[in-house]
Image 1: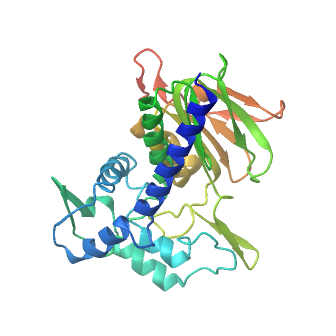
Image 2 (image 1 turned 135 degrees about the horizontal axis):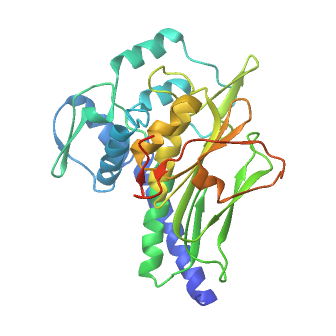
Length: 314
């Protein structure tokens, strides 16, 4: 809906935005988040970089609603496993004793305290790593920038996270969900208006040691990779919440995801469990077009009360 020149200019500006955000939110390179992680263990209040405060606030909300399953305060565990690097191939699991020590320290987002423009930590084990939501939050900021530039129809994608606004030449945007193997298409979901989709999967960041695959996300309760699911896909209005919710539901696994989804206010979920079975809520089932027409799908109870439009109490 804009000229080619305006579209190219908008794309360039978004590239600059993402380059800045990558520097600001990198958990282990020098930068604003690195400085925050140096100061939190001191227990003293300090003025936080403006680029970090919104991520802290959003993470605390998701942490509380998910019962601590979404927990960016476990950056120390990610470092211990070697998941802080871009290339994790050739890694090996850390010693069980080191994992137990970090889990026992119980770092959580409730150990980070906001007072106006200042932050203070109350647990030296807190090490913030927002990598589970920074793609989504960056996409949300990018969409705001596009709107300021007068763009009304667009798709912004980073990895397995996408946000769309408007339409694609009068048609819905069609977003693919990968198979559990990470290759090939499992399903296509239609998005329209202003919606986001995020997928968290065990094929994204992993290594193999002695024939066993170890992956993110890590379960903060055990310190080991969450083991119940292959992938979780969530549709939500904003991309950051979609990413955070998908992470929490992946960790909750097949037995616990419905309750956690309701607490998070999520309405559309598709999970592939460890056996390769697909389970989704009825609302998501209405939006999913599976590549394999014979795909076996299990339906969960509804996540939303259809009459009230509120999370279901079933």
